[in-house]
Length: 364
Ligand code: FAD
Image (cartoon, rainbow, N blue to C red; front, side, top):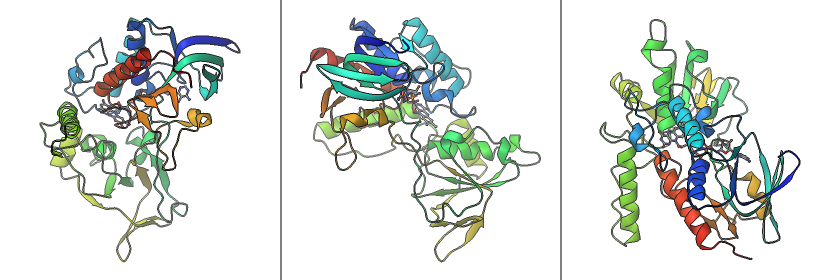
């Protein structure tokens, strides 16, 4: 489509799991649509995570609509398994994914929206934005960050323990990424005569490691029940766990059992050689890995000026208040319950397509 002007009922931006799930429902609704994806191949963010990452739910509970994820021999599938599944998914439903196509901006244009990309312009009656969060890593500010001479990286840069052999590494963050990277770095099987690296784990709150029998599937059920309770005005049952809590997948379990999951409170500053606490100790380290999360990748929507003063984009369901021809999916609970998980992406996509087809065109 290079340099051309093209039209579609719906342009989906992003061809990860959320974009593909949208494609599934758009196909069923008989709409004319395209999926524009910046990657060279299928899989979205799953193409970029570290090889030892394990899903926190078994395959049968990690499926998109229509096609179950094939079972794996290990209880928790790898990221490569998800990439294969998503590649097969888009082929099976003949989803019209165009790649690599990077969307620069979305503009209002007459009765529809104009989508400017590095491969031409699209006009659409509706846009579904499904660009994920992996592309917007979040790093909190701590004094001394520019002072520190060692290596600093974020979850998105971590590829495995090999470069950290024999080093002391500080891991920041209390979620699943931090726990799995810590387990990876301290796996005794990977180091010569010991673990690959010495890890120092720091978290803002004491990390919550879930009991062995609670995995992503149970968390999803709990989250759904909690939402129903709140919706019905019943007491908030709060909780056994939340989606941010750490699931004891086998490598994390092994790390716990060898005593490696000991977290310290968050440091207050970085020094030239490491980290330090006010009135307290300092620890030198060769590297700091910030497992501090992500923000939604929404720069392409900036011309629409949808953010309120607090930075949020207000939605009704998946539809943007400020632009009713735009739907947002897959970014987290604010776009739909557990929408940034494989099991939640389908429902979020279904809701978006349902809303979009029940009000086919909403002139502003
Ligand atoms: P993505 O997979 O990021 O896909 C978005 C796509 O949009 C990408 O291909 C991207 O290149 C493209 N894109 C972005 N901007 C543009 C643009 N401007 N123009 C065109 N294309 C663009 N979920 C689970 O269900 N189970 C788990 O066990 C699990 N573990 C996780 C572990 C980690 C470390 C992380 C980070 C996440 C995990 N998740 C898990 C969460 C979730 O499933 C993923 O974050 C998921 O990849 C989100 O899918 P998505 O389609 O919304 O976004």
